[in-house]
Length: 169
Image 1 (cartoon, rainbow, N blue to C red):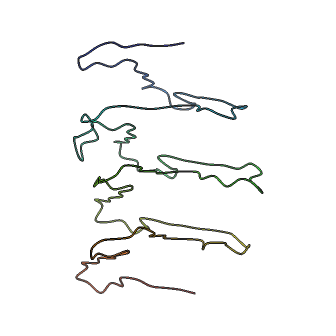
Image 2 (cartoon, rainbow, N blue to C red):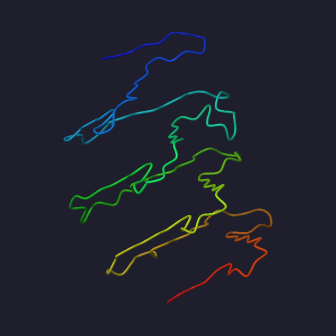
């Protein structure tokens, strides 16, 4: 099954609408014996089209939920592995790699515009009981920086009685 779009104007090649679906899956991909390749590949050779900052236009992948989410208890995006991932399983659930040179893009940006949240913006939990080889959380800055700058920086502009960093052992 192949779809080729040779349109040179603003168009949609394929749209999947499941506006009334309340349970089930809008799209399900099962690749139970895949050992090489990809279940889903998204690629682009664009050089200037991904340029509209902050508007979620020009994104390779865009996940948007714009409802009220008053009873939201799940995840907007979930990456899960539950098999026997033992010796030899050294991969990552999420890999962000930038092999470009002399670029200024950030590898990961997280923003919250909520002024009323009481929950953590980022939470890391590990139940590991083995001895970690390189630390449970590791920051490795191995480039030779040619100028001044911080390897790790925390800015807190709170004007109330807040704690910037607390370490509990």
